[in-house]
Amino acid sequence: MCGFVGAFDLKSGGQPIGEGLREELRSQVLEMSKKIRHRGPDWSGIYTGDNAILSHERLSIVDPLSGKQPLVSDDEKIILAANGEIYNHKELRENFKGKYNFRTGSDCEVIIPLYKECIAGGGDFSAMIEKLSGIFAFALYDSERDAYLIARDEIGVIPLYQGWDKDGRYYVASELKALEGECVSIEEFPNGSYLWSGRDVSPCASSEESATTSASSLVPKPIRWYKRDWESFDAVKNSPKATDEKGEIINPSVIEKVRNGLESAVRAQLMSDVPYGVLLSGGLDSSIIAAITQKYSKKRVESDSKEGAWWPQLHSFAVGLEGSPDLIAAQKAADYIGTVHHEVHFTIQEALDALPDVIYHIETYDITTVRASTPMYLLARVIKSMGIKMVLSGEGSDELFGGYLYFHKAPNAREFHEELVRKMSKLHLYDCLRANKSLMAWGVEGRVPFLDKDFIDIAMSLNPSDKMNIRLPDGKQRMEKWILRKAFEDLLPESICWRQKEQFSDGVGYNWIDTLKRMTEEKVSDAEFARRENRFPVNPPKTKEEYYYREIYSRLFPSDSAAKCVPHEAGVACSTAKALEWDAAWKNMDEPSGRAITGVHDKAY
Image (cartoon, rainbow, N blue to C red; front, top):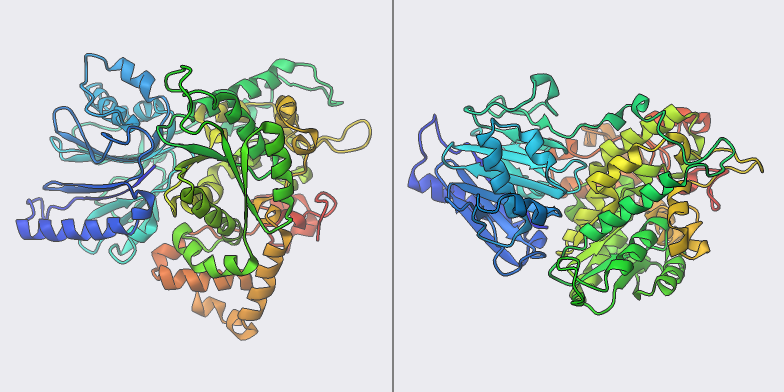
């Protein structure tokens, strides 16, 4: 995982730019790139052409010696800057034997021959990108055609932003901070989409399929490449059921498919030439990922030989206030799984002191993201100090299986599934953003096996009734994520496998959130809050806690464009606004903590 900045459409009136302006723009792009060097502390590279400049900051995980970027094709006509990992790159390389001369061992280089093949075949970029299994954002420049292809992975695990300067030049960057101050307009590049600037090859999509409206008519609109049948409830409502109406298992193969799919995803994502570890909060999701990782960590998955992993044992990491729920549970899980476990304690004051740095790195003022990112940011620093450059984590499970406690109130299967689809479409704004940017602030790559493309299809195609919290014959409601717990109950201690959902910002210690609410209530006066719409006309803060974060954010990112890049939606316990209709008591609530769900959370407010 890395970071890059791309500048395109440099020509003025269609004429090549002069040497003086080229050098000026090159220096500017280098300065923009320096702002995201934390994402790639291992190497810096730059390509400068007549109509494009690509700068790359590298975090070396695969092929540390020869995989520096930007990558250049065997005929030196195509330049690529990529951020992320392509897990099926070895399989794709086999398809190009004798057709393309690979110049590095980088997993990302396969994008170049795929592009060449796509262009030769008429330009079906959706089909081209669909062949990639991984997490990625990339900018590819075809110097022969003077055209560029920008793309982002299906969920948006990897961040990507686009912007336009006062002269209409088009920029893309891995983080917003690289564009702020240089671009007059900034947007998030939509996940699951691509943008092609060429004219001689027509993208295979209609204008109705555009993913967003660009801020400049000079640049074509991104087009959605990622589409799935399971986005419609009608496509999954008759899927085979694992259980009957009483909750009895009638089709164990459905549960087995969940297990096999996730194990395959974890195994594929252990691809690494550097030491790796696992994040282990003691919750269900991270514990499952840790247990599966331990299963495969005894040997290098790349060679499938007896050659040992880079570290002789798997190391796991947990963070929290001393005595917090997560730390206690994580130790139980680690003892059972057999990892070398590390507890990282933080104090309230340390976390409060870190808030400005956290907001700078995560580039959001969203309450739940700031709350959860702060301990993760502190944890990442310790992980990096121990020489680990990659960790596996459990993000995405709650969106796939309805793990948030508010899902207990879903009125029917259709509402349940449609909320899952909404949550999946917003992951790039919340959990993926938090995990990626909190870790990459210290140059640690996070991988998320639950969000493997194939596993997403498995989980989202399940019959929604198998994931719902149905009422059992004994009168109790079935526990959230029941089918996932059942699939892996033999790998975990019972107290972990059947532990109630605890949101990360709660699990690190309830006093963390309680202190934030109390502190911001004191720091933001009633008079300031009353004038919030004058102070922040774009997305006025809804609470004093949000106001406090917004003040910090606005000092770091003062433009209205930056403010608009942050989601601003009411919810309860991480729900979408639409789900507030499920319970009349939620109508006037706006609290992301799981403790807001009375009657469900053991420690409800």
